[in-house]
Image (cartoon, rainbow over all chains, first blue to last red; front, side):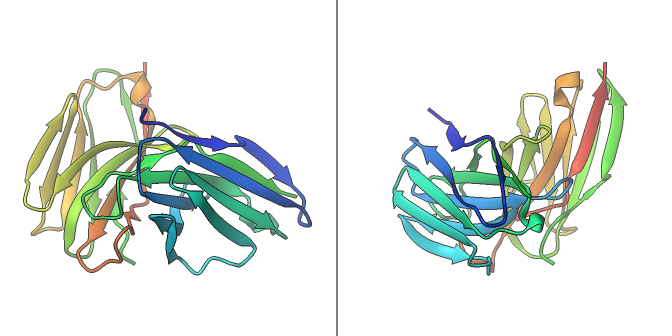
Length: 114
Length: 113
């Protein structure tokens, strides 16, 4: 199984809502990532977890809160978002953090903030 | 910026033709990877070339790496309509925080049947 799954596929939320994005992999990977991607732009790294510990936080606003409950799951909790946060949110995993490992991406969650 | 830059930004060809995309980067790298993204979908890893390799093949894909020029190229031979997608190069540079992959801006490839 080389699949990374993400739910939901689409999410529309108001600026006062609280919602969560979920990501799951069963490849035994110990590194997991959240990216944000705007239209016609490359993915931008948000967070990296290694062995369920937050390894990298790319100065992301606190209205985005990541969580890694176990080695297979990664959540992104959303609260008080702004319209400019509308984007495709991609989850990825790799065997470990390291310069030789490819990353496996999920299909993404298309988020619209109204 | 440590991001790579792809050239061209957009490429439109007929089925059966070859497509060549180039990537330039700024720092010393450990490896360079190419990813494909179909519209609005996740990225798919295509190929990884290490800094000590000069050329690598995978099916219809051929990747070259010239570390002296800090550039790489991706060649897709005998293209198909299904190859229509955005293609990104991505690098781990030697000085980066582990896990931080730098993506280029991407080339949008359109293959017409």
